[in-house]
Image (cartoon, rainbow, N blue to C red):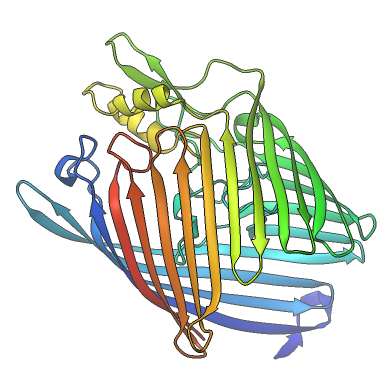
Length: 414
């Protein structure tokens, strides 16, 4: 339908659709010294959720407005052992994941403002040169949705091959900060961020290189680069890297009780690099293999020291726990391998897709292995099965908390 929108005086088109997710998750929780009998972390063993995600879009000549609210209703069953106790809790949330204005100011100039997700680069595991969005382990789940950041973007197409984008994040999106508080009162102040991205690409868009400069977490300056080179045989190579002036993550430090605390780093200089390099083959199946170098991350010894800061009863234990969960690192140690396979159009009707993903820590040989199946049940309903296995002892990064998780669900589109 169309109508006149305010003083713009032009007919605007309104569109609407909505995705509804229903799913349940079972978690096999590891009994460890970090979470004995599940009384330390109180994690849910069962989760049942209904998740409604509508999209509203208003479009006219030269501009559009997009809003994606989210209505999430969840019930959780937390089970404790020795003695056995079951509790049910509800966790309901109404939120706005996306709300932005896009304005085509001139043929070669675009302006965006609002709550949005903005990504670039060819890597799948994470995008280091992007200071606004960070790695989350659950991001590869079908039920995950990334909440947008409050961004302002100005993009200029100098030619068909050369573009410049200025991006700012002036205010918070009201979500908890990515890094735990580094002061005694537990408050974490939002710090504005910005980046200037310049990109050069060929006419087909399968070969490009970009350079990024800006200011990220805790007002640390950085520069980064990303590039993708694709060949006609379906093979592509890509890289994405960030070089930051000083670390922002917490590090373990020996305290006066012969144990460790997680503290803010004292080094303020030097360049610390986080980089992803990968190769992809797109044919009947889609294969990826990526290597992640995470220089600010903890060494194997530092990881154990950080873990030990949670185990000793001391006044700083709660603070250490918060900093261990959100240390200011994309991943906690320094080197990883990531592999993924996507197998589309399987089964007789070619209506099924399988995904297999494996994130492997070279520091302690633990890994997070994921298997996902997606099948079209009808024109508007898609069924999902997801299994995540966490391999490694309780002293390793991916083996600390869970043995495995299984989810079954469906998406219905209106």
